[in-house]
Image 1 (tube, rainbow, N blue to C red):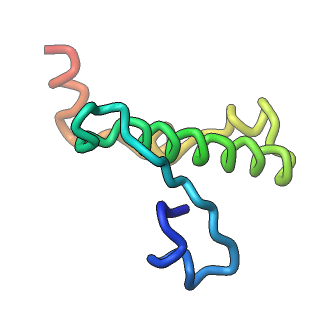
Image 2: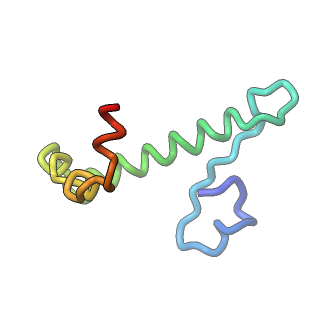
Length: 81
């Protein structure tokens, strides 16, 4: 996912162009439209992978490493202080 076919995107098997013609910033300096385009494309890829891999609501309930691993020493005391 790039803004130009001439950067790293040319080296991959697939190139997803997330280029925008102009940012919303009147000076065309602040990344506004381009970051929104990148987020939308990333979300679309994530949703497509959910479908392709058959990910379900039950899969999202699986424990994560943060839920399984113990908290660092003293973390509980700091939370309740």
